[in-house]
Length: 180
Image (cartoon, rainbow, N blue to C red; front, side):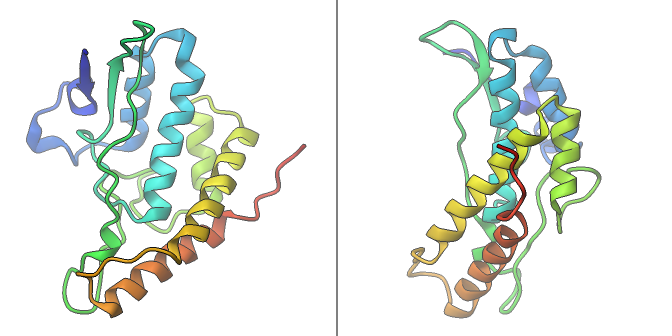
C-alpha cells in the first residue's frame, strides 16, 4: 500500500515535522488527492484537526497525517487517522499541562473559537454547514465520553485538569446553529 505522510507531501525533513501550519499542510494534501474524494478528504482533514484540538492531541504534526492509495479503489485519499494521543493528560510539571497544538491553525496554536475553524473550512473549500455539523457532532461525542475516561497511571489532579480542558473546549462548539 502506497502511503506518504504529510511531511513527505511537503518535501520536509524529519526535523521539520512541527514547522509550517495545518492550513498549508491541508492545502498541499488536497492538491494530490483524487478529485473523486476531494470533498471527503477536506472533511477528513477538518475532522482530524478539530478532534485533535478538542481532545487535547497536541502531537498532531506533519508526520501524523498521511495520504494513501486505497487498496480497494486505487484512489489517492487521506488515510485513516492514527496516533491520536491526548497530551493534556501528560504534565509539563507537577501542576500544568501543555494545551497547545503541534501545528498552528490561523497562526495560532490554542484557544480556538468557532470562527477560527469556520475560516479554515472556507480556505479548504468545506461549506460552513458541514463544518458546523462536524464541530457539533464531535464536541457532543467527546464531551459525553470524557467522563468515562480512566487512566490508572495519571495523577488525579492532572486527570481532572485534562478532563476540564476537554470539557471546556467542547462546550465552546456544541451549540452552533445548524441550518436544516
